[in-house]
Every structure is written in C-alpha cells, then in structure tokens.
Amino acid sequence: MSILPQFSKFLGKLFYNRLVVVSYVKKNNIMYKSQYGFREAHSTGLAIMELIKDITNNLDNNLVTTGIFIDLKKHLIL
Image (cartoon, rainbow, N blue to C red):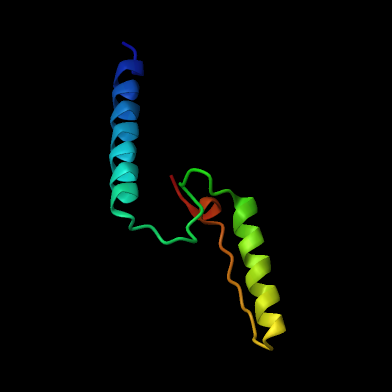
C-alpha cells in the first residue's frame, strides 16, 4: 500500500488553505507594508534596500539604529 495518495491529499489541502489565506490578506490589505516573506514581488533584496535606507536616514538625523535578526527556519523542529 502506497502513502502517496494520502500525501498528495495533504499537500493539496495545505496549498488550498495557503491560497485562501493569501487572497484574504491581499483583499483586506492587512499585511504590514514592510513584510517581505510570503509576498509576491517583495524579495529579500528589497528588504535590505529598505534597511539601508532607514539606517542612512537615521545616521543623517543622529539617531541610533538597532536590528535584531532571527532565522526562524533554523530553529523549527519538525
């Protein structure tokens, strides 16, 4: 007996649920403008450009900038 049919049903449900959530979030515009993960046309390159812009603006205004960077993928236990 193969587990592939059950696995494909699980993946199908997972992808469907993700699509429903993504369309709801887009429709209701509830995601923070600087959220780059899980969004179309929002790459890590754009996140870095925004970070550099913020740091530069803060330096120009004699403000301190602090960053906390966490790679959650490395800490997930599956």
